[in-house]
Amino acid sequence: MAKRKGAIGQKAFHVLELPPGVLSDTAHIELIGDKEASIEGVKGVIAYEPNEVKLNIGQKILRFTGLNLCLKCLTDESAIVVGEIKSLEFLM
Image (cartoon, rainbow, N blue to C red; front, side, top):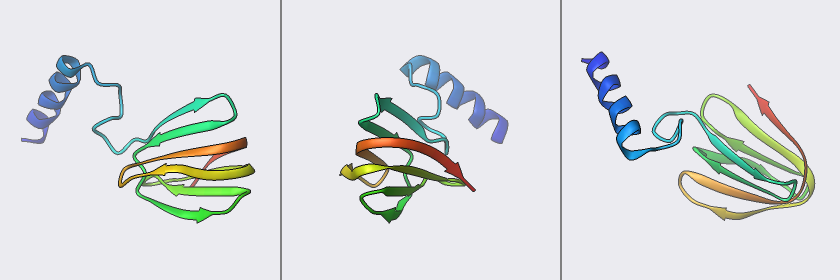
């Protein structure tokens, strides 16, 4: 039965023209220069400071460091981090 679900999921991706990772546990990250990051697949906020933002993205932690960082938008599944982003790390 699991194999059948996988085939149906692949057909749905193709028909709906969804980007990879949208319906999986994989986070989707888009950067706009060094000023903004949009993250889909957020499970929660671990740290929120002006120099550091840590987001739970499932099996990993996504860590932003920089200056004047803030969460412009936060929903149940996504976040937008703005500020002067200096680095982005995946932590275990």
